[in-house]
Length: 212
Ligand SMILES: CC(C)(COP(=O)(O)OP(=O)(O)OC[C@H]1O[C@@H](n2cnc3c(N)ncnc32)[C@H](O)[C@@H]1OP(=O)(O)O)[C@@H](O)C(=O)NCCC(=O)NCCS
Image 1 (cartoon, helix red, strand yellow):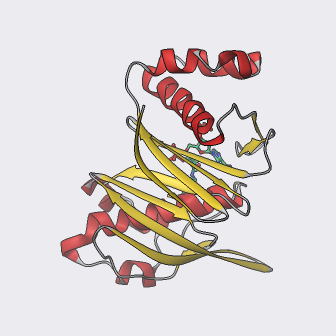
Image 2 (cartoon, rainbow, N blue to C red):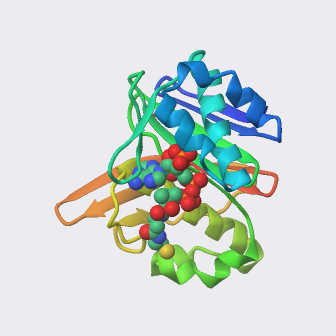
């Protein structure tokens, strides 16, 4: 695996790796320290790319912690790190895997930037967010909004959030490279605000919570 991005503050650690076909061997080195159930679950994924992504997540987690982490999932599919006192979040895109560990709240998403996003913007963006997009940076900027909403969705960790209404991103200008912005999870009787950061890594957009 190749580390392509890493950053940290006193609360959060974020790392992104690319992996290749050697990931099956790298995962083999870990299996004695994982539960047999987890190893079986991962090995039983028939889709090779998906299996590689799951394995890469575990290998990257191991390299951040310096030892194996025990993961369980809640009824909504949110990963819980049982072995260490951190909130955890995973994301994958093609042969990339991203992991965030946080003493506070973790949420991360990586996605390739593509014009396909134009077909779905109205499903996840509200009008003030859409108004901030400019034609010359439309695809990349809209992808950042998508990643931000996925990262906030993972931070909240439960289903039944409507992206246009319950996950709100404060409109922000697109600046090439990296930037900071804000988002909220808004429910009937509560609102939780989060700081977010983004990075453009080649053709990929990465967004993560930043609990500095
Ligand atoms: C669950 C979801 C966030 C995963 O995102 P994705 O882009 O498909 O895939 P990613 O690779 O970025 O993320 C996968 C990781 O999400 C995590 N995840 C899944 N469900 C989760 C949940 N409820 N809470 C937090 N994290 C979750 C898992 O850790 C998974 O990785 P792992 O299987 O290796 O552990 C996404 O499929 C989803 O359901 N989004 C909400 C859908 C929605 O409401 N869309 C409406 C707008 S059009």
